[in-house]
Image 1 (cartoon, rainbow, N blue to C red):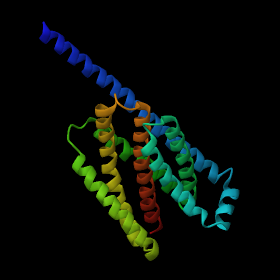
Image 2 (image 1 turned 90 degrees about the horizontal axis):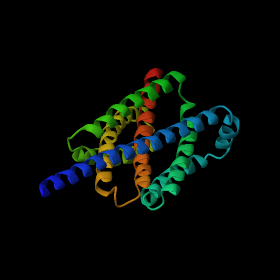
Image 3 (image 1 turned 180 degrees about the vertical axis):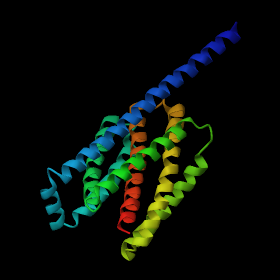
Image 4 (image 1 turned 45 degrees about the vertical axis):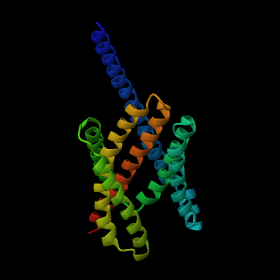
Length: 239
């Protein structure tokens, strides 16, 4: 009889975990999708309604580009450290980041054709969806791949900073392919990692906060995939 009760309790815990995990993943993807939509709207408004004002201001205040590059980094750290303590504030920071990235995308996309932008977005979406599904369903531990991809990303960032002074288009083109590989791996790893974190700590911290933190990771993966593919398609079309 005791064995039956133990088995029944275990089965209920497993069902509860599975249902809770589904709700968590749905919430995480909803936050991430909303951030992408906010960025798209922000970018569209920058390129149309507010184009003259924003582009004019940027041309007169070149230092502003560094500010809009630094602010999202600061916000991402704020979300990472505060997500489980203050989910609402973290969600608002994620949306603020999405708006700023939208402005950045507009400044970047102004140098590319609509065909390149569309191709990059569709390709990034296809790669992202494939890898996040794989990361969510695979039983294989992706920790080693995630660690290697993170190390490669750090090296790529350092090399990209150096290339800012060299300004080699060939190096930029090569780095874009490397970035696509890195963020393809990180998309699968971040999905699996957030799933693991929820199953381990979901009953100890704010699930809403975890969902925002996961949305941040996936949003950054998608954004970097898009930018890298945009550079590849854009530079290829010019050759």
